[in-house]
Image (cartoon, rainbow, N blue to C red; front, side, top):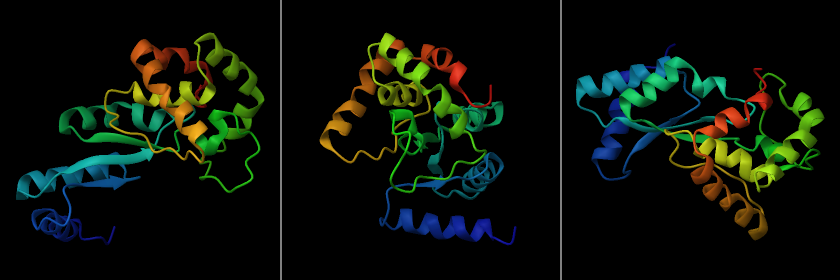
Length: 185
């Protein structure tokens, strides 16, 4: 609440206008906060936010897919950069990670672990791996421009890249296909 958003946006604008950055974006902002920043930038002729990095996955759909976010992204052209799209590897099949993973806001992961075999079967029916299905779902969102992944080997990177073909083949239908696995259901 004490953040002087106008001043911060002015400083960010000076960085972009000065050539030290090409664009700017936000990470984990609320829709209200990002809308306010956009409005200030438009009113004051400042460089506008171009991208938002926010948690978005098969399990966590409601944050991005609610009416307010959908409207904001469509009206402003701010692009979506999903983070934690594999839920710390869980959606790729790593059910017992040996390293610390991103936070599990809402405790959604344990219930999914119990259903992972169903998810793996669904992916196989589509000719994909669980990771490909998960990433393809994020890619199918029209606002998505890139996805934050954490591949630790060339094999994982190649597998993840296979999501592109799946997203092209199934497109928006992916939302319906993975709907039973959304934690909000």
